[in-house]
Amino acid sequence: MTDAIGPIFSGGGFETIELTENGEGYTILYLPDKNNQKLQQEGKPPVYYWVSSQVRLARHAENGDFKFSLTHYSGDPNPTDNEGIGVGGMISFTTTIAYPPSVLKGSQEKLLERFKGSDKQYWGWTTSATPEFRIVPITSNATSILGNENGWRLDGEGPGNVTGGENAFFGMLDALHSELLWSGFHGGTSPIAIQQILQIPVWTEKLNLKITGKWSRIYNHFSTHLSAGGWYWSVDIQRVFNDLRVSGGIKVELQVDGTMPGADEMQKLMEQHQELILKQFMDQASKIIFEPAPPKAESAKATRGRNFWGFGGGFALKQVWDQTQVDLDYEETIEFRYNKEFPISSSLEGLRTIIQTNPDEEKKYFIRNYLDLVKLVPIIVKPVINWPQPENHFAGEPVAFASVQIGYPMEEGSIHWEPQVFEKGGSTSWEPQIVRKRKTDVLNPPQNWEPDKIFIKRKLHLVESPSADEFQMIFVEKNDVDLDPGDQGTLTNEQTFDVRADHVGMLEVGPIVLGVEIPGPTWMIEVEFQALGNTHDGNERPVTKMMWKYESKDQTGYWKIYTGQLDYKPEFKYRVRVIEKGVLGEASGSEWQGEWERCVGNGPLVIKVPNRLPIPV
Image (cartoon, rainbow, N blue to C red):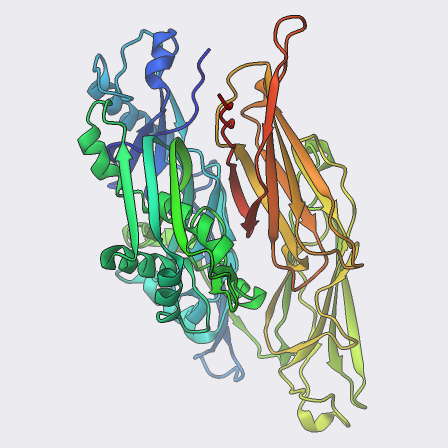
């Protein structure tokens, strides 16, 4: 019995271009399922997956309006003066990578017309069963705003939607950037561009990959190309790795099964799978010459850096390493499923055409408010928490509530604290009214305080959530976590603050999928996981187990640990045991177990299942 197992990246896919009545253009890429030929041999429909190639503004389903709003605030200190003084603005918008149903329907008809009756491998439609179309599986989506760190400073970056849904962005703007956005959207082009780096699990053809070299030469080459800050991000490692291939320091041999149709062409296509080659090299190098970069460095780059196999973070060369391990000699033959990096980016076009065609439409999206200038310290606090959902298999984050205190000096110098509690179903933001003082108004002010600075203390109160099932494991090691330690918390002149559960030091692995197919109901695969390091009270972290059986072979696992350690580095290891049950009176069954595999970072994980050891003759 054959099932669809996911897309194969072979031949670059099939692409269509669709135009709507209002002139909007859409480019859609399709990939076929690896099992399409077997599916049709059993009378089942072939499966095709669509891949988005652009990010666009989402629309409201009820009226088609864009999910976009820009409010520009101007102060008016002189009532007799008609010219206001810009003081800032607020922008919110929502993006999506999904296509309108009518656009998908048109592109799918083109694909079916092209491959109906064709015998082209993977693509041909030769059965009477109607083909199925699905969105391509996405294991992770790193969403960012290009230029955000130097300009708009909007919230919403980070992990994005992986089901073709929507991503929301929000931010308070200073006067200059509010005016720039206003002018840009009314002018010739959108001033904001969104980038999403998707990780798409794809299958390869059967291939043999061999990587050889000398670790001493590799180590020395990396040490002479040390990046600024003393550690490497993925783009640095890929560049040096390519230099080593050119110079002969690393030899990469990639061979495709020559008995397969078009093997010569497939050899060239597989050379494009740089993520696969680099992942296998890093699996070896992280055990020999690399160690994880410091947590602060990882945090600073998490939303920017691209990664090898779905994990963020960087690496540093080991200060001391075992030079007796002189040879890099990796070889494996396999049909491989791995996470292929698929970046897409777009500017937010469309608004300019609408407001030029119908000026009345502008009022829906662009608002100017004139305010009396009030000397307040502008502060916005928002909980960015996926509240627990017991009714939905305990989805979400195990947060009972979050508390925030904003402090500002009184006249005698002591700090007055304003508290706020965020709970599920409660308020979604808080703007405390802090009247700004002059520095001369405060006697004995706190050290380093300035009138535009406040003190903030944020705290998360976690609750142990029962695991929804054997594939969703959630553990809380510390229930109350101070995000701003100390009696006075953090002194800052920032204006926008968020409270996040991932600030508490999380290990978040998932989705977890098997890298092989379970052949039948007598087979089981048990995976042991163990987070490295000790808990806050000094204890070793326990082993967690997940068991895949034939009936649950397509199940995805999730494993989370909320450590309460602000400097926590996500590192873990896993070990795989394969079991074949025996049949009473006929066969005794068998089992074998692999070695511990060490991993670094959060994100999706494809379990590498060891092969059965050969039986001695």
